[in-house]
Image (cartoon, rainbow, N blue to C red; front, side, top):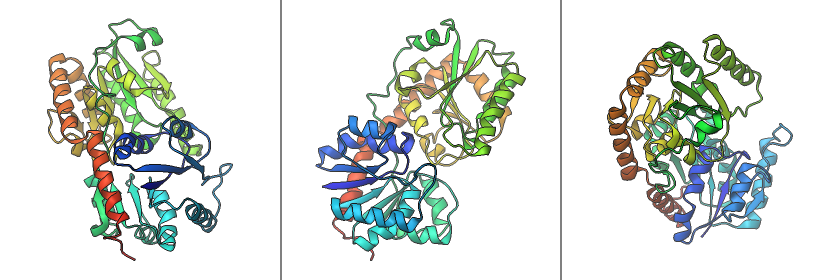
Length: 376
C-alpha cells in the first residue's frame, strides 16, 4: 500500500521523528510511504537516509506562503500523479490544507493533531473532510472536541519510541569533555525548541533559586529557535540576559541542536521540561525510555505518559518555585532517581513502544483505505 505523507516544514522535530520511527513497522506490513515535503533540509536528509521517496512540495517560499487555493491546486495535481492509496497529513496545519483536497479527489485521508491550538470554524470544517483525525493524546483529543471536531472520527494515537535506540546506558562523560567540565559535574538538561511555550524562562528562574545549594549543577539548553518573529528573537535574547543577571553564565550552556539525543540522555542526571503547553512531549518518552529521571510541568498529555508520581515529578506550569524544589530534591536523592528511572522505563515498555505505535497506525490506514468508515 502506498501512503502519501504530507509535511509542511524542512525541519526534523518531534512530529516528524515520531512518524518516521514507525517506518520499520509499516514496511513489515507492506506499507510504503512517499513524502510530499520541502526538497532540502534535515527532514529531506532523513527521508533520503530512510529510503522514503520525496516529491518536492514547498508550502512556504522565501518566507512567504502562497494563497491556500494555489497550494491546494498544486497538491491535487501531485496526488493525481502519485495516486496513493491514502493521504496522511502529519500536522494540524497540513490537515487543514489537505482536507478539502482529499475530499475532492475522493481519496481516503488522515490528519494528525499534534498541537493544542485554537481553531476557527473554517479550520474545523477543513479538518472534518478527513476520514480520521489522530490526536497524539487524550488531552489533545478532548481539547479539539470542545472546538467542534467530530468525536466519531477523532482517535487517540500515542507516539512511540525505539526501545533499543533509547535505552538505559552508563554515562561515558563525553559531554562533560566537550563542555570542558569535570566528570563529577551534574548535568541537568532541557530539550526542545527555543520558544516561549517550552518554558525556558521558568527553568532559568528555578535554577537561580537553587544555584547556591547545588553549586555542582550545570544546566544544558538543547534546541534552537527557528521562528524569525520579533517576539521569538526577543525571547531568546531575554533568556541570555536572565541567565547572566542570575550569575549563572558559566553554568548555563546553550548547545543548540545536537545530532543524537539518544547519546545525550545517558549523560544526564535529570531532564527538566517546564513547558506551558505540551500535547505529548516526545523528549519525555525518549528520556523515560533511556531511564533518565524527569521533572515536568503537568500540562497536556504529560500525565498520560506519567500517571504515577513514582514515574516522574510533575509540577504546575509557570511555578518556578515548585520546579526548583523538585529538581533540588531529586538531585540530592540518587536512590529516588534510580527508582524513578526504573519505573519510567517500565511505563514506556508497556505503553509507548514504537512497534505498538506502528501497529496502531497500520490499523488506521487499513480501516480508511477500505473506505468502510469514509464519510462523504
